[in-house]
Length: 156
Image (cartoon, rainbow, N blue to C red):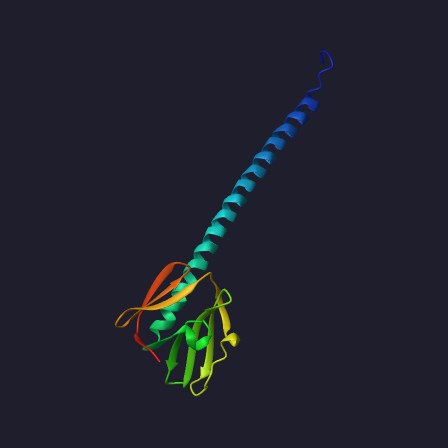
């Protein structure tokens, strides 16, 4: 027997709908928090990749050859470059900083004047510098971070 206007079926439906709404809101909240955490981790990972990759590239590139020349900026219109001479393949490889990129230019060893504006853009960076840090040690500084390579440094 029913007392008053109370409908238990309608009350159960509203209760179930309210519980489902609370569950859906909690689920959305968890997804939003997870997405924000993932975005932050992704940005930090990309930042570290952008910092380390040019340094590791330079260290590996320089250690692959026995002899490197530091070419003064006067020779290339204000650009200081590293010249790697690959005697096995008769190729000169120039690595330099120009236009906010680390660039690399390959030319045949007998080319008189390299065309550095034709160099391939490798990595976007803010700054790069080379200097001899010892008798057979070269220091490359990229965006304030340093890497060293043990190679014979000679000057033209």
